[in-house]
Length: 412
Image (cartoon, rainbow, N blue to C red; front, side, top):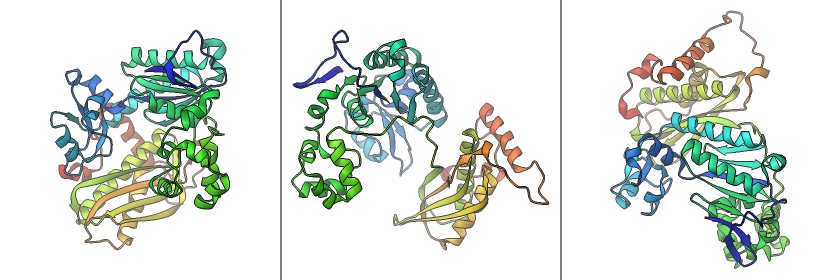
């Protein structure tokens, strides 16, 4: 789909007549990204329903191509249910390294167009192409160029929304999937927004939607016609004002380049509930090593270690501890995580999921670490950096703590 919003609806996009000078924001969203990368790796799977996700008893769908989506398969669906709906699907386990590699190549394409790129995840980003106009043309032409380059260079497709704000650009990319481009001129924003359901508004979840429905509101246009005072009274001042503005197409957020991470984490859902403290400790070690590698790869360190422990009845317990110094060392993160688990009083309790997260991040280059009197200048930090080099060349399983090398395969 290649279209432009008009007062009468969506019409075919005509690049010779389009006026887009007031719409410099692009939202790029890769189509079924994980599944698309798997199809590149496995050409024999093209044309067949493809699902990416965990294959264990509690596996969930991470991505599905459009052939699988026609059967009702979608992300976050239990894999067992997805395979009942689409029994002929080809299922691939997630390959994070491949997805990150292709994502980096896509982001390089975006940054060759403009430095004003705000990645949201591996497969989507906002761009402000105001500065690219003289070199490449207007925003719609830039969006067309990006789509062509991603298709040619990465053999993947994406959908692009072009608008005056981030909120409208993201909605536009959603409405032209897959492999589409939708331009929403500033003068037609309300015509585009107002027929859409409440759930399309940024910040409207199930609870907020229920509150608005009790007021008789069903569409974004209904919200736009509601006095802001009513929205503030029912939803609170902050949310009420935000929804009133968005319903009119107003969104003051700018494209933010290199937005700092708030935290880096990893978690694992066991194939079966686990009560063995030794096995849980090994999993916390594995997750801590993974988090530390990500910290070092992004040049960051953190001070607060958080563990997430979900019991078999789905109750979730989190515990955190702030360290005296910033760290990117897996051994330190692991020691803290396992100590937090021990202090949580869950010894013998059956756990469904465990997770490790590091918060309070800063750039490693800007942090001075005071050595203890008996601490050598090099140690575990240098050892783990060597492990990073080995992992990049031979894979993450090539060099790891011995206790993880003996781990049962069912642990993952």
